[in-house]
Image (cartoon, rainbow, N blue to C red; front, side, top):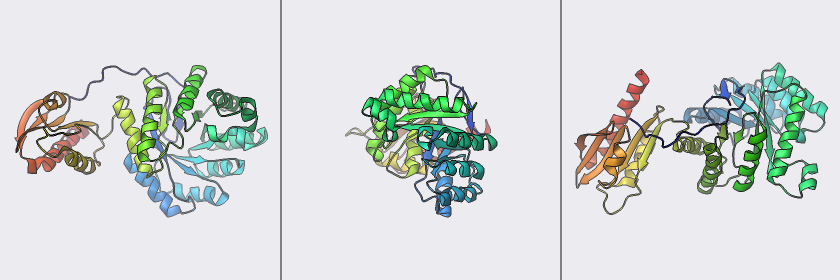
Length: 365
């Protein structure tokens, strides 16, 4: 038994592409991305961060390659990682060619910022030769000069026009293995741009609110912006941009998808904010359980409710549940039904044991 969604989100059907071994668009699961914040030339640190992100559940990781030393370092890095790598390129077309040749699975470029069409053609040839996809990354902070002169400021229409112009550049060269983003740090600007682009574009869309901010404010802005679009069926892959440890981006990304019943990974904890009725310290218990159960990859629902007001109802909808009872007498639920009682000092080890056993069951099936 698991949480039952009230409605299913009908996703807009887009073309399917591949970034390495990860499918994006079509009927593929919505993928979660992040980006390293190490110096790419620090090969060991970058390898470690990529593998940490991989272990946290990132489907794709982006790495910035601002200079030749970075793009050449990518070749060394790729030998020690398994997750597909997107090379982030700005302005210099030779960096894109070097990264494609080094084995990057995807190139993030803004074709309008690369320069001449001839330079774009050379990038596309390198991408084709190396089976490398492309992300057209339109950003309100780096719009083409001509569009800023036309619209006077970044606006949804300018972002969409930039995307359309860049799509044509690739299509004119018979290159179709790409996805698109139209990001801004403004939630309203971003969502309006994505909605408009989605109506006229069949290529997969990479969602994000760029430069969203710190862990708290950035998570909120991203959840609102990305969440609204996903609820409308728009979006094929997401990246939550945070001024924080990149692993937090992966965690928040999955929480957004889990909250919309779009993808499930790991333990989904339903917990109350706690009050004077609580039969055990809910906040502390949830914090410990989140940390102790972070290794679980299988989708499992767990309710931790401090009293009997909402506890039984929530527990009836989860695979494992705990409801506060008397001073030292709390009810454990399995598959939505009352099962046995547990003392306060045994809660943590009991819940961990039950969730781990449920995880093993799911692995067998």
